[in-house]
Length: 123
Image 1: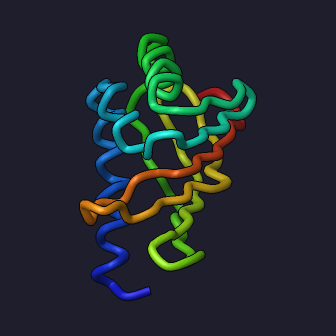
Image 2: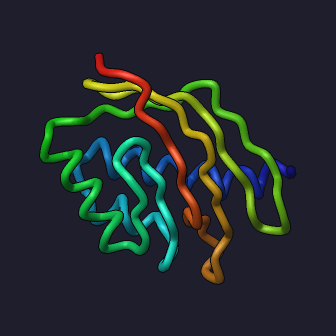
Image 3: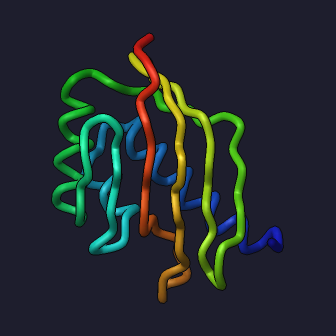
């Protein structure tokens, strides 16, 4: 993966993290492509921006904040699609990202097309 392409994907990931840490569920959801799927274990599956935004708003309303990623790995899948795996922590929980699939869009930005993560415990 070339470093310029990687920067596009990293920018998308950082935009999502910044939106969450700013408590802005709409901007979180805007980092997902239309029709994308999010599997949030053990909560369920959410399809489309509206459902994803409602999920993140609920999490924010419960006082969850300060997400940080660690052990981040990027893997090339197909042309313009890369997968992120990582561990994550928040102020009240921690877990693992099994698969964030990011795809470069027509405007040159990367958006999530699939997101699968799991809450492993409380803090």
